[in-house]
Image (tube, rainbow over all chains, first blue to last red):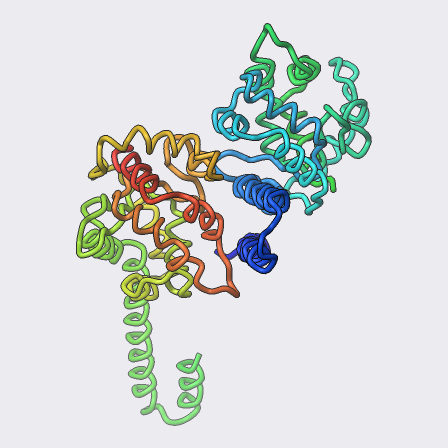
Length: 227
Length: 229
């Protein structure tokens, strides 16, 4: 089995990261005595690039999302405020995820700014899973209109008509469908886990509960193919 | 068809020739029966007969029930391995994406049917792990496997290989793997895998991880995995 562009991009990124490190060393040598401030800046740029590569190792090339043992979510185009909020939630155990707890607690505020800015700018094609057209159409209807008889408001009300999100409201467009399915079916077992410190995840709790599995599958199929 | 045409041709001539036609027909019929039997034998060999023999051949080096074995090289455990991973690696040997002369020779003679049958058999085996890793390194290895080394940008192994290291699809099972095999692979990753730049494969995902781990960290992870059931 071969992959086409993905790993090639990883490889070329590795090569260019190495080249960048060499040029840092080279410019240091050529300038004779580099100013400490310059050195610090290139060190932090290096650090950021290495951390981005680390995130993409699991979250996929260009943070498109990836299927490891778990579906690992797309971060590309995500709202910086949402990412920061979630990383904080992992640290405070408001959102339970052992791997992400460990990832999050070593990130400095500067790195967080750099990472979230980087991910918001990325715009790869969605990593789609095949879904029947009628399921996608049913999902679009739920997303745009909600389901009045079961008190499900339209998702578009908060996540926007294009599902791009805003501030604390996450972008959902292009998200992995199995990731969305897992999150919505487990909502109250993963989010808002610190009763003393309630967060915005409570808004989604009644919605996640009211949607049936089939309705969740439909919304997930619709969002998965949205660019 | 030819027999029928021959019969018609001869049939329009003398009565004597009918005997010859009959003989010819009989010969054709025998030939067809024999061909059928040979073909049938080949088919059943491909699906049944040869698989146990080939399995025994694999186990000769990979250990009973594909448990792994220490030959001159540590020869990996195949028991419980993901079928998609096994197929992908055999293909990688054939295409020289993964360099291993012995496995190239083993792999290139296997038919797709045989590969499927072998992969299914190995996936179903559950012998106990051979173990062998340094016991005192197991807790450190477990921590690295489950959490990664976030300060060194090493992703958690569990994110892709699963919390029990069973793998899934193209992502291999690591539980119970020989510790020296795991060590050798991680230390030599980019010299053995993804060797055709024009044909990059999933092995690229592991390159940054393998590069970022230190030798003691690799040893610890390998020790942890060696005892996992």
